[in-house]
Image 1 (cartoon, rainbow, N blue to C red):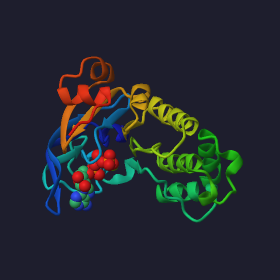
Image 2 (cartoon, helix red, strand yellow; image 1 turned 45 degrees about the vertical axis):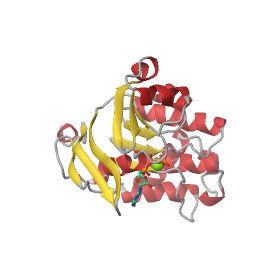
Image 3 (tube, helix red, strand yellow; image 1 turned 120 degrees about the horizontal axis):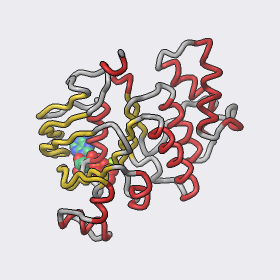
Length: 241
Ligand SMILES: Nc1ncnc2c1ncn2[C@@H]1O[C@H](COP(=O)(O)OP(=O)(O)OP(=O)(O)O)[C@@H](O)[C@H]1O
Ligand SMILES: [Mg+2]
């Protein structure tokens, strides 16, 4: 099967460092992201979560070391999608934002309308299809953004604190969409500051401190038996420097 041959998984970091302007954003990170339940990336501000996700997407290249997708160090971004904390909406209707994602993914023009409807239904936004996307609430916009990302049927969905500015109800709604995507086979890699969210979503946890992966463990092990004092402190809500 073509799809199996071209899988982007596992996504492997081999001694990856990332530096810019005298700052070390990532310091010899080795990490394997496998298919399965969501991988949640946690750690204090500035620990390198966003940098890690950008490298997962292929938006930046490592200063040292290699990132590989399914064993390939060169991989087109077509099977991956990334969402940031602030959704970026085109100055168009909700439906047109989704259709744009489909066009970008090379989806046949004559099937875009039906597929747009299907995607909007999946994220609970059918009623808002004709509204200007930029007038929606933050939570609604983030659902448009994830529908647009899902339009390309990504094998890997990278989410950088997508619920950071959403209220609890909007957060839960977004999480349900993420879980449904994960259950249908999309590998989710998500940065989060919300430990409750990490407990709800994570299969495994990558805990970062100062550009290093301090700990990678199943969610159960991370919360019940953290192996580093930094992780234990972080789980308690203490300051990690
Ligand atoms: N383009 C850049 N040039 C120089 N330094 C950068 C650049 N981008 C990020 N940094 C620095 O790299 C470090 C890691 O940043 P990164 O954004 O990856 O952290 P983060 O864990 O996502 O933080 P937050 O929780 O605040 O989102 C920080 O010290 C940041 O200031
Ligand atoms: Mg960040």
